[in-house]
Image (tube, rainbow, N blue to C red; front, side, top):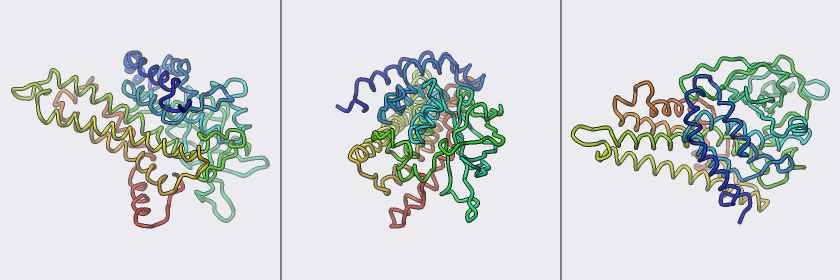
Length: 396
Protein backbone atom coordinates (compact mmCIF):
# COMPACT_ATOMS: atom_id res chain seq x y z
CA UNK A 1 0.00 0.00 0.00
CA UNK A 2 1.16 3.53 -0.78
CA UNK A 3 1.78 5.09 2.66
CA UNK A 4 1.14 8.55 1.20
CA UNK A 5 -1.96 7.70 -0.83
CA UNK A 6 -5.68 7.97 -0.43
CA UNK A 7 -6.12 4.43 0.93
CA UNK A 8 -3.42 4.75 3.59
CA UNK A 9 -4.37 4.73 7.29
CA UNK A 10 -3.16 8.30 7.77
CA UNK A 11 -5.25 9.53 4.83
CA UNK A 12 -8.36 7.84 6.19
CA UNK A 13 -7.72 9.36 9.63
CA UNK A 14 -7.39 12.83 8.11
CA UNK A 15 -10.61 12.48 6.11
CA UNK A 16 -12.45 11.16 9.17
CA UNK A 17 -11.20 14.14 11.20
CA UNK A 18 -12.51 16.53 8.54
CA UNK A 19 -15.87 14.77 8.53
CA UNK A 20 -16.10 15.03 12.32
CA UNK A 21 -15.67 18.82 12.17
CA UNK A 22 -19.03 19.25 10.42
CA UNK A 23 -21.10 20.31 13.46
CA UNK A 24 -18.51 22.84 14.66
CA UNK A 25 -18.12 24.32 11.19
CA UNK A 26 -21.88 24.74 10.79
CA UNK A 27 -22.10 26.34 14.23
CA UNK A 28 -19.39 28.87 13.35
CA UNK A 29 -20.57 29.57 9.78
CA UNK A 30 -22.68 32.64 10.59
CA UNK A 31 -19.87 34.22 12.62
CA UNK A 32 -17.36 33.38 9.90
CA UNK A 33 -19.52 35.20 7.37
CA UNK A 34 -20.29 38.18 9.63
CA UNK A 35 -16.69 38.74 10.69
CA UNK A 36 -15.38 38.12 7.16
CA UNK A 37 -12.74 35.66 8.29
CA UNK A 38 -12.48 32.02 9.21
CA UNK A 39 -13.03 31.55 12.93
CA UNK A 40 -9.72 31.32 14.84
CA UNK A 41 -10.94 28.11 16.49
CA UNK A 42 -11.36 26.58 13.03
CA UNK A 43 -7.78 27.46 12.08
CA UNK A 44 -6.66 25.94 15.40
CA UNK A 45 -8.69 22.81 14.66
CA UNK A 46 -7.06 22.54 11.23
CA UNK A 47 -3.62 22.79 12.84
CA UNK A 48 -4.46 20.19 15.49
CA UNK A 49 -5.84 17.76 12.90
CA UNK A 50 -2.70 18.11 10.79
CA UNK A 51 -4.43 19.52 7.72
CA UNK A 52 -1.73 22.14 7.10
CA UNK A 53 0.86 19.35 7.17
CA UNK A 54 -0.68 17.23 4.43
CA UNK A 55 1.42 18.71 1.60
CA UNK A 56 4.28 20.01 3.77
CA UNK A 57 7.71 18.34 3.45
CA UNK A 58 8.57 15.73 6.03
CA UNK A 59 11.76 17.55 7.01
CA UNK A 60 9.50 20.27 8.45
CA UNK A 61 7.21 17.86 10.28
CA UNK A 62 4.81 17.52 7.38
CA UNK A 63 3.20 14.40 5.95
CA UNK A 64 4.03 14.90 2.21
CA UNK A 65 0.82 13.08 1.27
CA UNK A 66 -0.49 12.72 -2.26
CA UNK A 67 -2.64 15.69 -3.39
CA UNK A 68 -5.71 13.43 -3.56
CA UNK A 69 -5.63 13.21 0.23
CA UNK A 70 -5.45 16.97 0.68
CA UNK A 71 -8.33 17.66 -1.65
CA UNK A 72 -10.56 14.92 -0.24
CA UNK A 73 -10.12 16.54 3.18
CA UNK A 74 -11.12 19.86 1.59
CA UNK A 75 -14.24 18.31 0.10
CA UNK A 76 -15.40 17.24 3.55
CA UNK A 77 -14.81 20.68 5.06
CA UNK A 78 -16.59 22.47 2.20
CA UNK A 79 -19.78 20.48 2.71
CA UNK A 80 -20.28 22.50 5.90
CA UNK A 81 -18.45 25.82 5.34
CA UNK A 82 -17.11 26.69 1.92
CA UNK A 83 -15.22 29.76 3.18
CA UNK A 84 -13.29 27.63 5.68
CA UNK A 85 -12.51 25.04 2.99
CA UNK A 86 -11.42 27.74 0.55
CA UNK A 87 -8.97 29.22 3.06
CA UNK A 88 -7.67 25.78 3.99
CA UNK A 89 -7.15 24.99 0.31
CA UNK A 90 -5.36 28.14 -0.78
CA UNK A 91 -3.29 28.55 2.40
CA UNK A 92 -2.24 24.94 3.02
CA UNK A 93 -1.31 24.42 -0.63
CA UNK A 94 1.37 27.07 -0.11
CA UNK A 95 3.22 24.60 2.10
CA UNK A 96 3.68 22.59 -1.08
CA UNK A 97 4.81 25.61 -3.09
CA UNK A 98 7.34 26.71 -0.49
CA UNK A 99 8.96 23.29 -0.89
CA UNK A 100 9.86 24.10 -4.51
CA UNK A 101 11.51 27.43 -3.62
CA UNK A 102 15.19 27.53 -2.76
CA UNK A 103 15.50 25.72 0.58
CA UNK A 104 16.69 28.90 2.28
CA UNK A 105 13.19 30.33 1.80
CA UNK A 106 11.70 27.48 3.82
CA UNK A 107 14.29 28.08 6.53
CA UNK A 108 13.31 31.76 6.57
CA UNK A 109 9.62 30.92 7.08
CA UNK A 110 9.69 27.75 9.16
CA UNK A 111 13.09 27.90 10.86
CA UNK A 112 11.59 28.79 14.24
CA UNK A 113 8.03 27.58 13.77
CA UNK A 114 7.02 25.10 11.02
CA UNK A 115 3.34 25.89 11.60
CA UNK A 116 3.66 29.43 10.16
CA UNK A 117 1.19 30.02 7.30
CA UNK A 118 1.44 31.85 3.97
CA UNK A 119 -1.32 33.64 2.02
CA UNK A 120 -1.08 34.69 -1.62
CA UNK A 121 -2.18 36.82 -4.52
CA UNK A 122 -0.64 35.78 -7.82
CA UNK A 123 -1.92 38.46 -10.19
CA UNK A 124 1.09 39.94 -12.05
CA UNK A 125 0.42 43.47 -10.81
CA UNK A 126 3.62 44.11 -8.86
CA UNK A 127 6.27 46.59 -9.90
CA UNK A 128 9.75 45.04 -9.78
CA UNK A 129 13.16 46.69 -9.73
CA UNK A 130 16.21 44.46 -10.09
CA UNK A 131 18.77 45.32 -7.38
CA UNK A 132 21.92 43.77 -5.98
CA UNK A 133 21.07 40.40 -4.42
CA UNK A 134 17.42 40.43 -5.41
CA UNK A 135 14.55 42.80 -6.15
CA UNK A 136 12.54 45.76 -4.91
CA UNK A 137 8.83 44.98 -4.97
CA UNK A 138 5.89 47.38 -4.81
CA UNK A 139 2.18 47.16 -5.57
CA UNK A 140 -1.27 46.27 -4.30
CA UNK A 141 -2.70 42.80 -4.81
CA UNK A 142 -6.34 41.76 -4.38
CA UNK A 143 -7.95 38.56 -3.10
CA UNK A 144 -5.37 37.37 -0.55
CA UNK A 145 -7.59 34.78 1.11
CA UNK A 146 -6.95 34.01 4.77
CA UNK A 147 -4.36 36.78 4.97
CA UNK A 148 -5.19 37.65 8.59
CA UNK A 149 -4.12 34.15 9.67
CA UNK A 150 -0.76 34.29 7.86
CA UNK A 151 2.69 35.73 8.54
CA UNK A 152 4.01 35.65 4.97
CA UNK A 153 2.57 36.19 1.49
CA UNK A 154 3.27 34.91 -2.02
CA UNK A 155 2.82 37.80 -4.47
CA UNK A 156 3.01 37.76 -8.26
CA UNK A 157 4.98 40.03 -10.56
CA UNK A 158 6.91 40.01 -13.82
CA UNK A 159 10.63 40.81 -13.72
CA UNK A 160 11.34 43.34 -16.47
CA UNK A 161 14.26 43.05 -18.84
CA UNK A 162 15.58 45.65 -21.31
CA UNK A 163 14.26 43.49 -24.15
CA UNK A 164 10.89 42.68 -22.54
CA UNK A 165 9.42 45.02 -19.93
CA UNK A 166 6.45 42.68 -19.46
CA UNK A 167 6.96 39.12 -20.62
CA UNK A 168 4.99 36.47 -18.70
CA UNK A 169 7.82 34.00 -19.23
CA UNK A 170 9.63 36.17 -16.65
CA UNK A 171 6.81 35.87 -14.11
CA UNK A 172 7.85 35.02 -10.56
CA UNK A 173 6.22 34.47 -7.19
CA UNK A 174 7.76 36.71 -4.51
CA UNK A 175 7.78 35.63 -0.85
CA UNK A 176 7.30 38.58 1.52
CA UNK A 177 7.10 38.66 5.36
CA UNK A 178 4.21 40.30 7.20
CA UNK A 179 6.51 43.12 8.34
CA UNK A 180 6.89 44.18 4.69
CA UNK A 181 3.23 44.41 3.71
CA UNK A 182 -0.04 45.95 4.85
CA UNK A 183 -3.40 44.18 4.77
CA UNK A 184 -6.01 46.51 3.30
CA UNK A 185 -9.39 45.61 4.82
CA UNK A 186 -11.68 45.84 1.80
CA UNK A 187 -13.37 42.42 1.44
CA UNK A 188 -17.05 43.28 0.76
CA UNK A 189 -18.68 40.63 -1.44
CA UNK A 190 -21.87 38.58 -1.91
CA UNK A 191 -20.31 35.15 -1.44
CA UNK A 192 -17.32 33.57 0.30
CA UNK A 193 -17.41 36.43 2.78
CA UNK A 194 -15.63 34.34 5.39
CA UNK A 195 -12.46 33.97 3.31
CA UNK A 196 -11.27 37.43 4.33
CA UNK A 197 -9.67 37.90 0.92
CA UNK A 198 -8.39 41.41 1.56
CA UNK A 199 -5.85 43.36 -0.48
CA UNK A 200 -2.15 43.28 0.33
CA UNK A 201 -0.01 46.41 -0.21
CA UNK A 202 3.79 46.50 -0.50
CA UNK A 203 5.94 49.62 -0.79
CA UNK A 204 9.47 48.97 -1.97
CA UNK A 205 10.21 45.80 -0.01
CA UNK A 206 13.51 44.07 -0.69
CA UNK A 207 13.05 40.43 -1.74
CA UNK A 208 16.24 38.36 -1.95
CA UNK A 209 16.68 36.11 -4.96
CA UNK A 210 16.11 32.94 -2.94
CA UNK A 211 12.64 34.13 -1.95
CA UNK A 212 11.43 34.10 -5.55
CA UNK A 213 10.19 31.27 -7.72
CA UNK A 214 10.14 31.33 -11.53
CA UNK A 215 6.88 30.18 -13.10
CA UNK A 216 8.89 28.56 -15.89
CA UNK A 217 10.64 26.37 -13.32
CA UNK A 218 7.20 25.30 -12.11
CA UNK A 219 6.13 24.48 -15.65
CA UNK A 220 9.28 22.48 -16.38
CA UNK A 221 9.15 20.79 -12.95
CA UNK A 222 12.78 21.77 -12.39
CA UNK A 223 12.65 23.77 -9.18
CA UNK A 224 15.43 24.94 -6.84
CA UNK A 225 13.73 23.21 -3.92
CA UNK A 226 14.02 19.81 -5.61
CA UNK A 227 17.64 19.73 -4.53
CA UNK A 228 16.29 19.02 -1.05
CA UNK A 229 12.66 18.05 -1.60
CA UNK A 230 13.04 15.34 -4.24
CA UNK A 231 9.97 13.24 -3.38
CA UNK A 232 7.63 12.59 -6.34
CA UNK A 233 5.05 14.95 -4.80
CA UNK A 234 7.34 17.92 -5.38
CA UNK A 235 7.96 16.98 -9.01
CA UNK A 236 4.39 17.85 -9.97
CA UNK A 237 3.69 20.98 -12.06
CA UNK A 238 2.89 23.90 -9.77
CA UNK A 239 -0.34 24.94 -11.46
CA UNK A 240 -1.76 21.41 -11.48
CA UNK A 241 -1.49 21.38 -7.69
CA UNK A 242 -2.61 24.95 -7.07
CA UNK A 243 -5.68 25.18 -9.29
CA UNK A 244 -7.45 22.41 -7.44
CA UNK A 245 -7.30 24.65 -4.37
CA UNK A 246 -9.74 27.06 -6.02
CA UNK A 247 -12.28 24.59 -7.39
CA UNK A 248 -12.41 21.72 -4.89
CA UNK A 249 -14.16 23.78 -2.21
CA UNK A 250 -16.83 24.57 -4.82
CA UNK A 251 -17.42 20.88 -5.43
CA UNK A 252 -17.63 20.13 -1.71
CA UNK A 253 -20.09 22.99 -1.26
CA UNK A 254 -22.26 21.53 -4.03
CA UNK A 255 -22.35 18.24 -2.15
CA UNK A 256 -23.48 20.13 0.94
CA UNK A 257 -26.15 21.86 -1.16
CA UNK A 258 -27.45 18.51 -2.35
CA UNK A 259 -27.91 17.45 1.28
CA UNK A 260 -29.81 20.70 1.92
CA UNK A 261 -31.95 20.14 -1.19
CA UNK A 262 -32.86 16.64 0.00
CA UNK A 263 -33.94 18.07 3.37
CA UNK A 264 -36.13 20.68 1.63
CA UNK A 265 -37.72 17.93 -0.47
CA UNK A 266 -38.80 16.05 2.65
CA UNK A 267 -41.19 18.81 3.75
CA UNK A 268 -41.95 21.04 0.75
CA UNK A 269 -45.08 20.36 -1.28
CA UNK A 270 -45.31 20.68 -5.06
CA UNK A 271 -49.01 21.00 -5.74
CA UNK A 272 -50.75 17.91 -4.33
CA UNK A 273 -47.56 15.90 -3.67
CA UNK A 274 -44.49 16.11 -1.50
CA UNK A 275 -41.44 17.41 -3.36
CA UNK A 276 -39.65 14.14 -2.61
CA UNK A 277 -42.31 12.35 -4.72
CA UNK A 278 -42.02 14.79 -7.64
CA UNK A 279 -40.35 13.06 -10.65
CA UNK A 280 -38.49 16.25 -11.62
CA UNK A 281 -37.11 16.69 -8.10
CA UNK A 282 -35.93 13.09 -8.07
CA UNK A 283 -34.34 13.39 -11.50
CA UNK A 284 -32.48 16.54 -10.46
CA UNK A 285 -31.14 14.90 -7.30
CA UNK A 286 -29.84 12.01 -9.38
CA UNK A 287 -28.20 14.38 -11.88
CA UNK A 288 -26.46 16.38 -9.16
CA UNK A 289 -25.23 13.31 -7.28
CA UNK A 290 -23.88 11.64 -10.41
CA UNK A 291 -22.15 14.85 -11.48
CA UNK A 292 -20.50 15.26 -8.08
CA UNK A 293 -19.17 11.72 -8.15
CA UNK A 294 -17.93 12.15 -11.72
CA UNK A 295 -16.01 15.31 -10.86
CA UNK A 296 -14.51 13.68 -7.76
CA UNK A 297 -13.39 10.66 -9.72
CA UNK A 298 -11.88 12.85 -12.43
CA UNK A 299 -9.85 14.76 -9.86
CA UNK A 300 -8.55 11.59 -8.21
CA UNK A 301 -7.86 9.90 -11.56
CA UNK A 302 -5.87 12.89 -12.81
CA UNK A 303 -3.71 13.06 -9.71
CA UNK A 304 -3.27 9.29 -9.75
CA UNK A 305 -1.93 9.54 -13.30
CA UNK A 306 0.38 12.46 -12.50
CA UNK A 307 1.76 10.78 -9.38
CA UNK A 308 2.34 7.56 -11.37
CA UNK A 309 4.49 9.58 -13.77
CA UNK A 310 6.51 11.38 -11.10
CA UNK A 311 7.08 8.16 -9.14
CA UNK A 312 8.40 6.56 -12.32
CA UNK A 313 10.63 9.56 -12.99
CA UNK A 314 8.78 10.32 -16.22
CA UNK A 315 7.46 13.68 -17.45
CA UNK A 316 3.70 14.13 -17.49
CA UNK A 317 2.64 14.41 -21.15
CA UNK A 318 1.79 18.00 -22.05
CA UNK A 319 -1.43 16.98 -23.78
CA UNK A 320 -2.56 15.33 -20.55
CA UNK A 321 -1.66 18.41 -18.52
CA UNK A 322 -3.75 20.53 -20.88
CA UNK A 323 -6.75 18.25 -20.27
CA UNK A 324 -6.23 18.15 -16.51
CA UNK A 325 -6.15 21.95 -16.44
CA UNK A 326 -9.46 22.09 -18.29
CA UNK A 327 -10.96 19.44 -15.99
CA UNK A 328 -10.18 21.67 -13.03
CA UNK A 329 -11.40 24.94 -14.53
CA UNK A 330 -14.77 23.57 -15.61
CA UNK A 331 -15.75 22.50 -12.09
CA UNK A 332 -16.95 25.92 -10.90
CA UNK A 333 -19.20 26.41 -13.94
CA UNK A 334 -20.75 22.96 -13.58
CA UNK A 335 -21.31 23.46 -9.86
CA UNK A 336 -23.00 26.85 -10.17
CA UNK A 337 -25.31 25.47 -12.87
CA UNK A 338 -26.36 22.50 -10.74
CA UNK A 339 -26.68 24.64 -7.63
CA UNK A 340 -28.92 27.04 -9.55
CA UNK A 341 -31.17 24.19 -10.63
CA UNK A 342 -31.63 23.06 -7.03
CA UNK A 343 -32.28 26.61 -5.85
CA UNK A 344 -34.95 27.04 -8.51
CA UNK A 345 -36.56 23.70 -7.64
CA UNK A 346 -36.75 24.72 -4.00
CA UNK A 347 -39.19 27.44 -4.95
CA UNK A 348 -39.83 30.70 -3.12
CA UNK A 349 -38.38 29.41 0.14
CA UNK A 350 -34.98 29.21 -1.52
CA UNK A 351 -34.65 32.97 -2.00
CA UNK A 352 -35.45 33.98 1.58
CA UNK A 353 -32.68 35.34 3.77
CA UNK A 354 -31.55 32.46 5.93
CA UNK A 355 -31.90 29.92 3.11
CA UNK A 356 -28.98 27.50 3.27
CA UNK A 357 -29.40 26.74 -0.41
CA UNK A 358 -29.13 30.43 -1.29
CA UNK A 359 -26.07 30.95 0.92
CA UNK A 360 -24.32 27.97 -0.65
CA UNK A 361 -25.27 29.13 -4.14
CA UNK A 362 -23.75 32.57 -3.56
CA UNK A 363 -20.53 31.00 -2.28
CA UNK A 364 -20.34 28.73 -5.32
CA UNK A 365 -21.12 31.69 -7.60
CA UNK A 366 -18.32 33.72 -6.01
CA UNK A 367 -15.81 30.98 -6.81
CA UNK A 368 -16.30 31.66 -10.51
CA UNK A 369 -14.57 35.01 -10.06
CA UNK A 370 -11.17 33.39 -9.59
CA UNK A 371 -9.18 33.55 -12.82
CA UNK A 372 -8.23 29.88 -12.52
CA UNK A 373 -11.93 29.02 -12.80
CA UNK A 374 -12.46 30.94 -16.07
CA UNK A 375 -12.85 27.91 -18.27
CA UNK A 376 -12.86 29.48 -21.75
CA UNK A 377 -9.08 29.94 -22.32
CA UNK A 378 -8.39 26.43 -21.05
CA UNK A 379 -11.12 24.98 -23.25
CA UNK A 380 -9.74 26.80 -26.28
CA UNK A 381 -6.22 25.54 -25.56
CA UNK A 382 -7.48 21.99 -24.96
CA UNK A 383 -9.48 22.03 -28.18
CA UNK A 384 -6.53 23.43 -30.09
CA UNK A 385 -4.28 20.62 -28.86
CA UNK A 386 -6.94 18.09 -29.89
CA UNK A 387 -6.88 19.66 -33.35
CA UNK A 388 -3.11 19.31 -33.56
CA UNK A 389 -1.93 22.73 -32.41
CA UNK A 390 0.88 23.23 -29.93
CA UNK A 391 0.08 23.97 -26.31
CA UNK A 392 -0.26 27.74 -25.87
CA UNK A 393 -0.43 27.90 -22.06
CA UNK A 394 2.45 27.47 -19.62
CA UNK A 395 0.15 27.67 -16.58
CA UNK A 396 -0.47 23.95 -16.79
